[in-house]
Length: 337
Image (cartoon, rainbow, N blue to C red):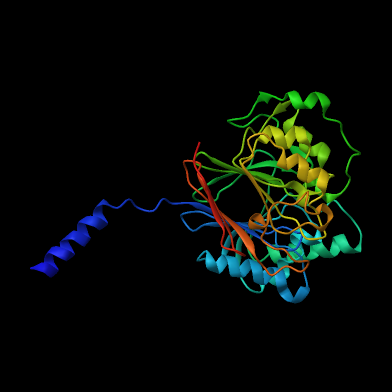
């Protein structure tokens, strides 16, 4: 009888144990000062934001595919290209040679001209012909199953009306000086807000200062977020206090390289944001020195040349987050509020 009693006890324990909570998983993949951010819903639908650099022996494509396979993916459902610069769309040909994509999402035509811009656009257009292509405008939604993805900015335009949770007057706008207008693709970045229950994550690519202020002034159109990936790799031509501090992120991820981004001025704005619990970085930023870098446990890479480490955020619908550093396996959980 003892084996039967033991088996019955194990069955009762299995029945009474709570099921593991389903999470939205966000992989911040190190592409050395570019962007490749992979989102995976509980339904195993995926959204990849940008593809990193071309060349380097397929380094960035390999890192993306490695993360995708860790997440149990065999394809990318949606590939969103924020803008047509080499560190964001350059790796698309290499990626497509290793993993298929269902739908390509972009802001429309490349507004830059010249041989390099034309070559990037030609590569992207050819890649996008392998699946469906959707050019979106502010207010549109990417139909990712399991999470809501709303377009905030696209092709130099921003949402006209505040989202649910936004609309607050922003007192920081009174002292928010503008910078010179940016004529490049950066200012046309396709930016999105991802919502999963109460959890909110914002990624606005390389959007630059004046265009970011359009989201924040005179009112905060987005509202507070839980997770923020720093605009433009933490460069000081982006990330105005009037936006970053209005967003009030609980956790921020800086997708910088050792020699790109992570400027002390931008770093200080993020680090001093009200309500910020932690800033994590993909690299130690050489320009920042010890004073303007986070402590080692929050750094995915300490070296000039990255080793492909990444930061993973797992979020629940209640708004809790667990952040994991693949380099040192350091984990920190931020309870729902």
